Every structure is written in C-alpha cells, then in structure tokens.
Length: 565
Image (cartoon, rainbow, N blue to C red; front, side):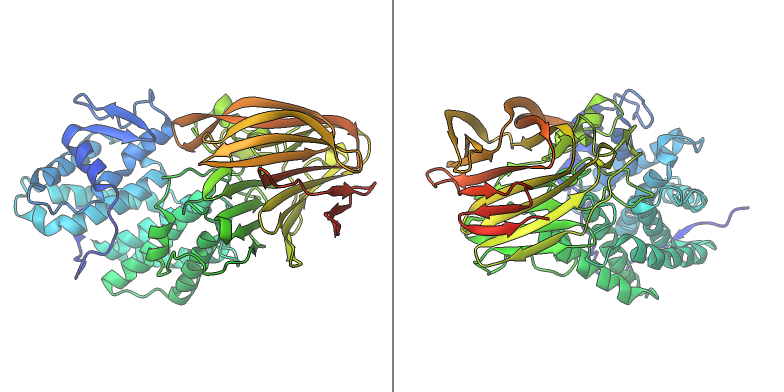
C-alpha cells in the first residue's frame, strides 16, 4: 500500500509571482488555450498530445503555467474549480508515462506549478473539496516526482537539468511523503554542482542565450525564495546568492534601451519574465546609470561586449562568444561576431529572432549565418547546423577585447569558422564620440573567396538607397543608405567594393510571429587578406574619413591610426 502524499504549509504571505492573471482566467473560463501566438479551443477534449500542434505548443499546454495565479477575487471560486477539473483531466488522459507531459522538462515545470497552486490555494480548496480531489492530485504529484527522479536530464544537462533540480527541491520542501527527504537531498547536491557549471564567472549562463539566461535567473531566484518561505537553508546558499547577483548584473548589462533582452541565439521577447521584474526578484534596481559618457562593458567568459552612449540612448550588443558549451550547443546559432544596435531607444539593427523550434526550413534559416549580422565565406555556414537543436562542426572564438582612448570606445573579437577555407575573421566595432558607429571586418588568409555581409533591420526601419556613389580619399568606393525610424534619419555608409542588394526577410521577436523586414546583403569576390567597413551616422553628419593600409590590419579614422586584431 502506497503511503499517502500530504502537502506542507507555506506560512506567511505568498511571495511567488503570478504568471499572467488575465490570460489564465480566460483560458480556465473558455478552455481556449493561447500559447506562442496560437489559440486552440479544446472543444470538449483538451489536446494534451495532439500532434497537429507544434511540440513546443504542446509543452506549454502541459506546463500548466495558467495555474500559477492568485485566485483571490470575489468571483474566483469557479476559477479554482475549473483549475482542478483541468488538472484532473490531465491525470485521466496521460496514464502511459510516454505522453508529451511525461518528458522530464514538462514534468518539472508542471510539478512546480501544481505545487504552487495547491500550496497557495489549499485551504480554500479544502472547504469544498468533493471526492478527495486534492488527495488525487497529490497522489499524482508523488508519481510525477518519482518519475522525474528516474528521468533527470543528465544527457541533455543545461537549463533543462536545472529545471529538474528545481522541481526536486520544490517537491522535497512542499510534499509530505517518505521520499521528500531524498528528493530534497538530491536537489541540493545537484544544485551546487550546476551553479558552478552553468553560471560563468562573469554572470552569464553558459548556453549564451539571453532568454534562457533570464529563465535560469528566475529559477535560481525562486529556489532562494522557496528556502526563505519554508525556513530551509541550502549548504550552497552563499554560492546561490552570489550567482543570483552576478546573473542580475549580466542581465542588466546586456539589455537594450527599451529595457528588453537582445534576441541572440534562441531568444524571443516574452519567453521569460521582463528584465525589470527579474532584477527586482534578484534584489537589484533596474534604474539607468547616471553616466553620461559612453561606456564599454565586456563579459569575457560569456563573450558579450556592450557599448553604450547614454546621451542618445544608443547601445550596441556584440556577440563574440562560442555557440554554447561543447556538450550542449543546441540553442546556438551561426551568429559569432553578430551584433544588435539601438539608436535613440529604437532597435535598428536586429537579430532575426526565433519563430519556431519545429524542424524545417524556417528553423534552419533562423539559425543560419545569413539570418544574423555576420559574414559568410564561400556560401558556407559558420557551423554545421543539424536538425533543430544540434550542431556539428563549430567555430573556435578568440578572447573578446575592449578599450577606449577618449575619442573611440571599441570591442573586438575573432573566430576561425572558416579555417577549412583558409580564412580568419576578426571584427572590431567602434563608437566614435558622440554618435558614429563603425563596424570594421578584417579577413586574413589567402586565395580568392566570395564574402557576404548581412545587416538586418527592424521592421520599423525604412531603408532607402541613395543614387550617389562617391569615393573615399584612398579610392575605396563609398555608398550610402538612408535609415528612417521613430522620427529619426540616419545614414548607413559602406567602404569597399562589392554588390549590394536590399532583400526581404522576417523578424521574429516572438514565437509564432514573423514580421517582414529588410536586409542589406553586401557580396564581394576577390583576394584575401582584405577588409570591409560599414558606418552608422546621423543624416547630415559627414562620413568619417577612413583609410586602410594594404594588409587591412590598420585603420586610420579621421587621422587616428587604430590597429585591428
């Protein structure tokens, strides 16, 4: 006979954050479920495992985030009843242990959400509990946690494994069962190991995805909150606090002026809580720096560099890091030395983002070199992209560097993605005070190669080519485009030979949503070594005078000689 599963009290005020209260109440009332910008009506049968829908959509349905809400309004009693009905429906229709909701990550998220729901509303539910529904859900939770314990994602690791650990800790703290002590002990043992493995010394998460960084920051902050709410102390509590602080510093350091994350690697807006909420959870203010002078920040372990010009609310986020840990690069893209640029608070140069995790041409494109503000050599990808979450050959990256000389702020990086082609690529990005942004590419090696450079613009940016073609003083062709956005007009100026095309693409700031966007493709075929330069300046400002030496290793910008890598 199985031992009964009980629920421990969480004394005091409930301190965990709600999911999306309005969306939750709407889903419970109508049984129309909205995830990833897709609405699905249950029509009497909830599609827990209906393969007509994308796997990620089914995962979100099985997560039960919509239970993570405080149903405390006067008319919320029916919401609690419907929430119980839907949870019991899941139990009734997922009995084999092989369905979508039994996969370890989905198990972990649902375990946490069910526990939050029952711990938060247990006393209210007890007043009208009919037929032992609470006991039925607690019994199901016991089975789910026991299953998770034997399915921990030690093969996948990364953020998935940390979510498994979080679920074990929540179950160990909130469930009353003979196994609870073992679950807690296993969770606390694995937590210290993964904090040291996954959170890099500069505070970045080792998968190098701002969205998953944000999710993991919430996970570790909630583990700390769980301990505070239940009177428990982890042996690694000091390490946990230190990692939360460093992760918050990293997040604060990489956000755009609009307060949101860059869409590098597998990142979308809304895939995690907003940065200001996460910073508050971590006990850090999201207030803007009082610095008025341009600033450069480098996160050397993660491989991110940021240049900010506070006076014009402009920022550039530069990705110089590896695709991810060697054993888990599944969220990595061909975006080494790519960047995003905001001007006057508006995103101007953007990453393509992510619209889907489903295998197919869209997923392949969104991970490709051409989908990023990067260089492609001889039509070859920076890395071998396999399936939806696998990578074969991948580039090695150099150490990111940065500097300042009073006139220029810069970040610089390099990679060897095209070593098989005999080509090396280094990129240095300068801010020439007050508001000229210079992107300089140096290609080393030998032989004749086709070089393509891509610049992706936000859908709100209008791009128009100017007919005039002039020459820089050293004879390099100079071309101009006008960029119009948010009442501003800027120029994009290119230095160097080649063919230019404005092509159509898309921008996906959310899953399931693609907006038309414009890409400038700059193609050139010739002998390497060589260099390419493009510049962003306000319209009406003279383009900087740029001269490159014969090797391309030195730039002279308005009389300032600057060595490249």
